[in-house]
Length: 388
Image (cartoon, rainbow, N blue to C red; front, side):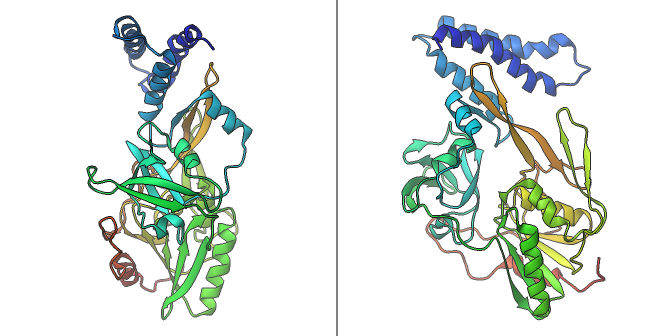
């Protein structure tokens, strides 16, 4: 496509997209002139750049920047995809098999939400909240989470160089991490203390409900009649898997609500056969608890099946869809979101714990301190109560 054609697409489709994203969010009661004002300003800005900028304008670069800016202003997981990226997404080709075991979002740079148990990232000391400034010397400032996930993947044994910021942006740290295939158990458990089982859910994969059921039966045989469920640093898996896990613990009531731009709010409720696990539960959460883990935690807390102990969760409750643009590019756009049983948003809000306990903070290169204050507090508030 020529630069002139790209410019036409920018001037025509750009305002249309802007209207969908900006004007659609405005109140229906707003005057139409007010609704179209941002679109006129968008066109004015493009015109001023083309007519007054000191150097010849690269129209492709301007268009990419405009579209990235529109998506970047929505939420951390929405993104503009180039035509080549759209083709890759539509081909649904599998990603390289190995990675470093992190889930990421976008917050100026790419930010680590969680590092899987036993993953290369965890072994390298990466923590929730660390910023990835560069991947193999490529800045992430204009990189979407969609792009970042792909840049971190590769073949087993290959390496990736990361520039990490923790706390002080003026003091970045370069590390090299060796990619590996996923390993370790998605769900595991142990007897924590007499009568108390500790259940760790690292990943909410498609088999999570069956894995939880199996592990809880093992804990019951070991004498557990109460459960401390740990979903800290747990963000991986489909959102629906969090609700599938919640059904094991909630016998009746609303698990969540789901709504979209053009879809009315839909209640997702527990049904016949749900609530097989009746033991009292406490949930351990932190700022790395996101996505399916948040839906799981919201469903249990909202139905009075568990108290949340720890830190406010990350706030990732939206689903993304690919919306195509006229020039072959696309928007990876949040088109629906889940709400708590009380109807409160999860996306960018997170869940407030019933009992707040701060997690440890360590400087880069330091080891985590001994002890687990969040687990200790959870155990102290977990008391025997009537079965749900």
